[in-house]
Amino acid sequence: TGFQALNRNDVQEIWRKDHDHFLHPWTHFDSFKKDGSLIMAAAEGAYVYDASGKRYLDGIGGLWCVNIGYGRREIAEAISRQALQLAYFNPFVDTTNIPAAELAAKLAELAPGSLNHVFFTCGGSTANDTAVRLIQYYQSRRGKRDKVHVICRRDGYHGSTYLTGSMSGKPADRSPNLHFITDFVHHVSSPNVYRRPEGMSEEAFCDQLVAELEAKILELGADKVAAFFAEPVLGAGGVIVPPKGYHQKTRELCRKLDVIYVSDEVVTGFGRLGHFFASKDVFGIEPDIIICAKGLTSGYQPLGACIYSDAIHEVISAPDPDGWFTNGYTYSGHPIACAAGLANIELMEREDLCGHVREVGPYLMQQLNTLRDLPIVGDVRGHHFMMCVENVADPATKELFPDEVNIGKRIADHCERLGLIVRPIGALNIISPPLVLTRAQVDELVGILRQSIEATMKDLKAEGFMKA
Ligand code: PLP
Image (cartoon, rainbow, N blue to C red; front, side):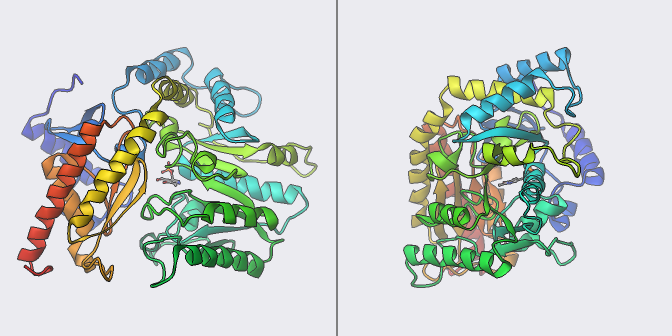
């Protein structure tokens, strides 16, 4: 990559600056104070290198986002060209720029059906935030001023602005020391098939979830519910693939009760499940709005998009005697970010990365499933390049280890030592690699993960958390 590894003292110095001054997202201060952060310094293809020059297979694609892999010259050149040509100009109505116009049209072409309009943001949180404001404005403009309530799901993740942090439903992220919007944001159950009620079939579980959503809409009043937000596969909440039929049934219900259906495809979009968008091509539904970010630029630039339907556009674009839709950011449609997005899509199409995921994804799923013979692997789930392993104390009862064991982190630490990055979330290890991963790299990933789980079991036995 051209990067020269730093010597020990220089690494220490960067570590100290980071430790003393950089507040990271979701910092666990207990471990951070002691260990600080691993400094990543360079990357190529599916591998990242730390500041000392140690190589790791990136099992998480940066943060489910570096879909085309690292060090792609085409993207770097597109960014550089655009920075020199026009780094920035304001997007507030009277002016636009070439990459933003081109990318909006390209997204309209890629998105299903009548989703032909795009609002650009700085990432996924701001795209979901925008969607709520857009929907509330739309409902009001249709004369439905009270239709403001939003329904999301426990274990859902939609971002961390005040509004999207309130929409997210991961129990561990709802600290009593933080404030959340509760007057118009509501949650229904997580569609977690692995953790469904004991003895219930997947079909009955699906029906129960759909009935619960219907009851929630009717309890609030269909004339008061504006939208339902759902990730096609819940990501940060635990790579949860809802039960069969759930997508269609919830979509139909929203149509019947006049509720806008928003598909949050921040992770599932841009090839991770083998298609540009998973809603229609994987799960057979056409939402009113699709949210994307991450893979939209493969993480080379920060960018998000709220892609919405002709029907919504027709309403919000009619003359408003009371004002207008006052929403947007300095960097909405940023020319450099949009140039990166365009180059990213071009590269994905040229190399047929979606086709590659459809071919290698089933192999990744199959190989990860071989880990089920290990006595602490309770579940292996996900879809193509969006996977996780759930580690449990007893696969028969699905009982978890005590929190203090920090099982996901322990396994991830062993992986890191052995040259693989996986992401720990509670009892889970998340696997969401760059989409360019080869079969040989799948073998490398699963091999190291197996070794790390085995090493962790040895530690747990020595510490008395498992029977020897
Ligand atoms: N929505 C989903 C499904 C996500 O996974 C994320 C981030 O992980 C977001 C929204 C928030 O995106 P960002 O972190 O770019 O604001």
